[in-house]
Amino acid sequence: MRRDYFDLTVEGVDAGAGQQGTPLVRIDFHGPDDLLRDRLVGTGGDLLDAEDIDVAFRLREPLSSADDAEGVVAVTNRYTGDFILELNETATDVLPFIHAARDSAGDDDARYRVEIETDGERLVAYDKDTFLVYDHEGNLLRNESLIPSGVEL
Image (tube, rainbow, N blue to C red):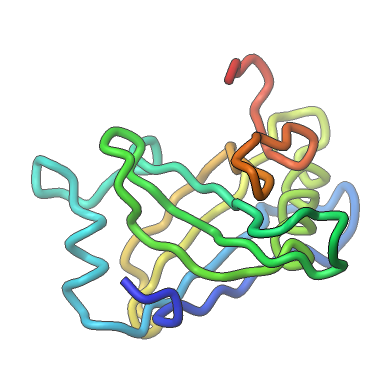
């Protein structure tokens, strides 16, 4: 699936520490209707639930090499490892979102919401607490990632 089929927007990033509400990432798909829907369906024929997917950001270049390091946001099927979707984003777009989710949580585990739409109509919405960030060599960047307390990776 082409990465240019997707637009990503975020809400709840600019409010500052201690903000109320859950940060939101909205991914809008502008490709062939059944293509995305087919990837979001599990083995039972129903749309995947939040616990069935993982969200990650992998850099294509070192963070230190550019102020606007390029990377790829990926949503994958947790059980099969298949990519549901990928889209190009920069670290300056993704990392502040992760920090906002962390700041909004206070003493609780951070959470965020992912909404996937097809041409403006919501297909699925997931409440998530994990957002993994990998460097350009595939190593997990724990300090940049959103990992709930008590989770061992």
